[in-house]
Image 1 (tube, one colour):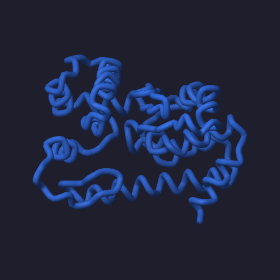
Image 2: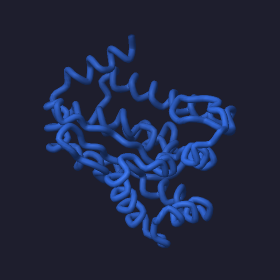
Image 3: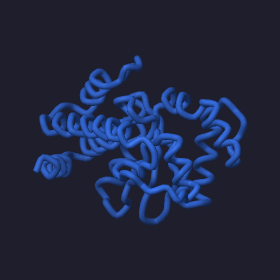
Image 4: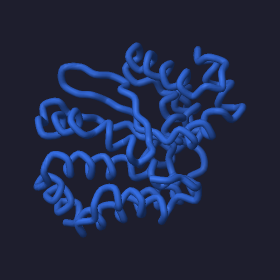
Length: 211
């Protein structure tokens, strides 16, 4: 019921509040520091969503100290990657991840924008390249097993397909659920989008960022 109430509350908002709360909810795991990035689909057939994004979306993402890039745009939808630059650097610039991405054709560089734009070009070429999982904070071994079309049995499937450490995955899933529930409750309580973003960061993120 709470989830239905959340969507009803969201739909009742005017355009600026609507898109800001939509973005806070969909990027809450990044704001909380538990994921380096998330993909968000903007449905172009949803006039309110698409127009609100065009009018207010980019400015709001910048205002909460996140970044985004359009991975693909077609006649029906816009797919964007919203990310925390520092968290993404920490995720991708480990030796194992860098070597893995370089072997896929990513540049041998320490500039995160080079990785982002390579992902964008591969996203357009391959529809949804599987290494995207690393940009989203999915454990490396699970990403590799998924790419390799492993004969391993999928042990658990929620936010991603888990092939290895189910106990660790369950802890992460629970953390994700906690952040999402916190976000929904605060939106239903009428907290402003910017205050909510700050509250999420203060409540969950151990890194020091300022919104």
